[in-house]
Length: 470
Ligand code: F6P
Ligand code: MG
Image (cartoon, rainbow, N blue to C red):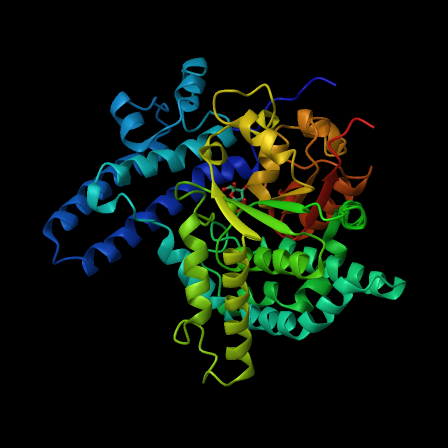
């Protein structure tokens, strides 16, 4: 099959077109407003105050450029040095010199946007370490209080049982473990529904409605591709044949706050049950896609769990407070033992899709990461943007086989699992007829936008690939 084109920002009636024309200006305006708030707090530092003014001027101009659909310019030599911009961006723009904000590949332009924002901050020494999205990340996590406590309690209650199962290997224990595996995979999956770039104005009730056990149970029928059993097979097989060898699970992370917390729950479950002996979390090296995890976000999350003003669970003696403290302690334990490790790499914030996670990509760490991920028993790709990168964000027919859409990753040895709530136009792996059915359903409430069912975050997919050509 010929490889289709990528989605463009001028593909009429797509979520990509809507994102470029409506969502990006809002995201950039929110960044300007948040910087203003922060600047006011730092008023006494004149240099810092003035530097913030320069960044805001740059951001306003940049926002206008996006609205006016000007051409995307290459990064200057100075910017490349100053902000360590990977050269892949300029190489792309050399090949696509006509690209403007209204007529450019959606994937490239979206990733480029966050690089340009980052350069503006890197220019100003006082703000170089500042994460412009931190305020939003924190306030949404704070609103996730109910979901956070519910999971902490669930984890604490489950742990003694889990340790027990980890040591025995009776058949009914195996069945129980499988049920729990499925539950924790779904916790991590639906954690991806808490997406700050889509939930900018969500109310506490709305956030609550997508984070609890009840919401997960109701959403089960919304998982339209579900390969959980295959991932279970891989890890139980690894456990049975481990003989002291490590069982490694990697997470190519997506969002901070509740989603990271849900991913840590899954990792803790895997480690405590013996389905994994090491989990490696791959974070972003710059503020990215509004809410994506950077290394510092893990430390902030653990602090938040311990902070009774941030999460008002009452006195230290309440069961809620104890459960939050307990999970924070678990995290500390896993980090000190090396069972949990965080890494970052600039590859994850380039525009390169994951067809480049291969021996052939030798300039931007694709081959280095590929080599390393071959040592992993399972690489979990979280969220929507990772799904777009796995499939190249191309206009595949929606019934295209997953193995076709992920290109080299189908056969280059990496065992992968994509956990994605659907928030973009690209969609593959569906059985014949399902897209038409869901489009019709969505169309009823969203006239003219039926095909956007898979951009709403209400449906999800769990896609596995062994990475072997069998
Ligand atoms: O702005 C578009 C987008 O990339 C969508 O694909 C998605 O809605 C969001 O941003 C990122 O989602 P996620 O955090 O799940 O990758
Ligand atoms: Mg994200």
